[in-house]
Length: 153
Figure 1 (cartoon, rainbow, N blue to C red):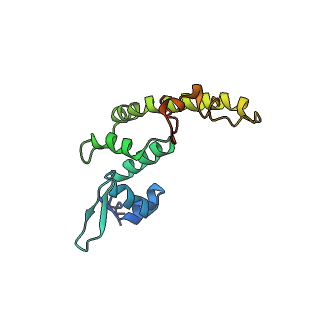
Figure 2: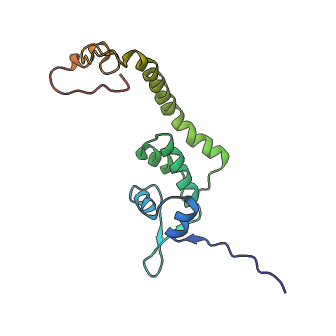
Figure 3: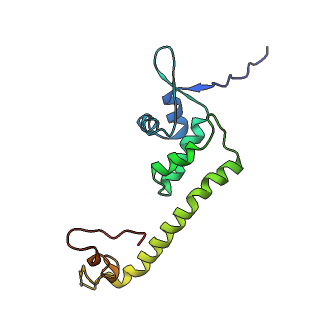
């Protein structure tokens, strides 16, 4: 008696995708509402996802883990052709788009860490002179009212 090999499903239910990707079904719906992933509907109007959605969800989770905003993830995924399986070359191109942003965040965090030791216990609480909160009184140059320092300044 011959064993039949299991048939590979081409479409997955939200529950199957959630189980295999480690995200909640509600997260899949959220990603779909943001245009990050797509589903189709079956005859009973139930969502079904192509198998390649597992890779897209993995990319989304990796990008979120390193702090990439969903809008940036969406822009990056938006240039891929529909149903495209990411090759190592395509992944390298995609991830290199985020490298500069990630390097900038690392630089900012290292600078904050290095300045933090001098701040703890100083007691100055000076909004004018604090090198972390208001370096060089840059907020004073913006005039009266509430202002917050921009990380890029």
